[in-house]
Image: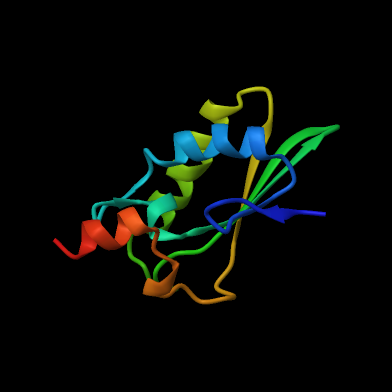
Length: 113
């Protein structure tokens, strides 16, 4: 069963999750200027060993985000770089819908400048 980590991201492997999140911190929403982790866009990272696969369930700040494809593609590339022996899959969802409550403390500080 998946368990929440310190950032409320569900995962079944804390070590691999931290490796993936370190790389996902480099994926920036170009309209906001903040990374997808601190924005709270990553809901779940699930790791399978056979076959080696990462499933990332994530959202966007809006269903109509004009940069959505860029953000999803960048997240996919970041996961492939973080764990090159795994195949990454992005599952885009809008349930629950994103809200400012999902921001990390660093994200709130960044947006309140």
